[in-house]
Image (cartoon, rainbow, N blue to C red; front, side, top):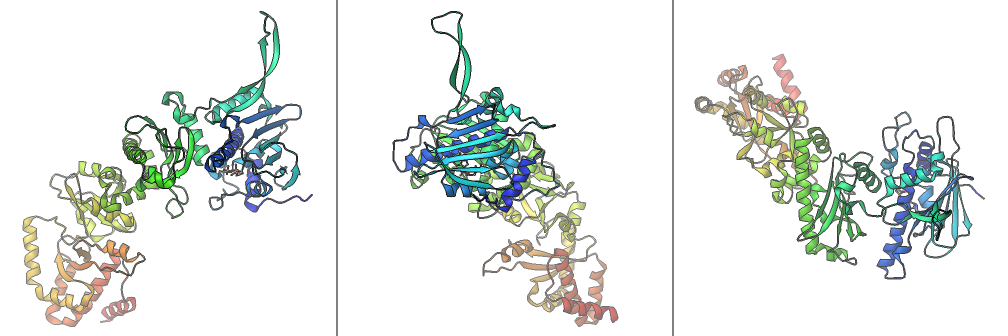
Length: 627
Ligand code: ADP
């Protein structure tokens, strides 16, 4: 008989499990029971979908047996079972490729729920066993097989005798060592406790033969010891219970088990609703994004149950895109068991449920924002981008319900602020909600235009994500206050007097500015003096709706259609360069053209844009230096 090797990742994980210093070793039982329950779900689901009937749900059971003398703990189910190939593929490899990124050897494993993180339940058996035997017979008939492994060295698969379909996992519990005692996993009371703690909600009976002393029938004081099958779990799904009956631990354990997250969620929403639609929902809002969240591979959706039986693993119609991070389930009696996907889409009940869930998630997030700011910010770092997309998406259809959930870093201490907070501390004379765009907060702070706005004591929102400005444009205003890009040409900060003076200056320097504009060809729409710069000589602003940042974002998208912002080169009217230009214009117009090129290139560099022709620019600068 040949011993097969585990695939590389599986072997690594196995090593991790065997040598684990993980403190909650007892969760191996939860994992094996969940697998058994899934296998019975599969069987039941198959029998429903091929209408074979014949299957009686009440016959499905998970059985636990303890043999203290031979140190064996056995967990059996009469679910779908596994064929030889399935044993090989499911237990010899870790199926969830891609999601696996192993912790480096020296990283601590204690503080992370590695098991939940990888979703590799079965292997946890090796935390407590030195040998694991899996006997299985698939429902589709055929032979039974036994898979045996002592851990890292490999496994064997051979035919075996087994009467009924299903799987038995036989654990040979490790001997006690100096620092670890595994005997508790052979103790009836302990097993009962662990089952109740982690697997109470499992909807199939988890049974165990238990010795009990009972009054002998017909007598009043004679006892006899009988062996009785006891069901260890209450079988009421957690979401059907009242909130007061469910402990925090149970909610969390259920979450980690079902949704493979190693971190506690940011928020748990458990609700039972009656009215136009009757349903129970248990929704978790994760605190960190799954590795594939912002990719096409990510599939949103909630599990859908009809009277306690799962009818769909991921029902996308239950949750809108902007809350696609939500995990959880909905159970409704109003839905038919045999409902198809197409029918569901048009189901009125389902739409009512989805609408009410959307409201609940929205209001829970608002609550989180006010009640636990730190947690909300952590959540926002993971999913804020999705919320901002939500503001912009569908032509702003959901913007009103999302506008209070989005945050931006602002010039005020460089912390995250909500739009409500910003408006709440606006200065009396402040006309707009100011914002600026750039790749990073530091780069935005260096924008020449930001200096004077900050000097006036106005807060600036720093927009660093591509979607940010599009979202604000979609909002258009918040609480009656318009948004204003500090790099837009119409930024209106000065007094009437200052404006008048500037207008005069631009008027009297018309020829100079016109000449500069002409020398720059089509690169800018015009050149003008400005009073909104403090120390910097120049800046670029944009006219109209399309900002320089938006131009960058749109042109980076894979489309043939390129756009061009209407760019204006603005020169600081109080900078020495302004006087120098006036002076030169009288003496040497060609030189003014060269200056225009250099100033334009400087402005681009400050904006974080590339210069069109770097070598030409260097040539011009050198010429100036050597003149
Ligand atoms: P997961 O349950 O997260 O998929 P596991 O390592 O626990 O990962 O199990 C791997 C696979 O082995 C399962 O997806 C399932 O297909 C199969 N399996 C495990 N236990 C059983 C069982 N009791 N009956 C049938 N199949 C099982």
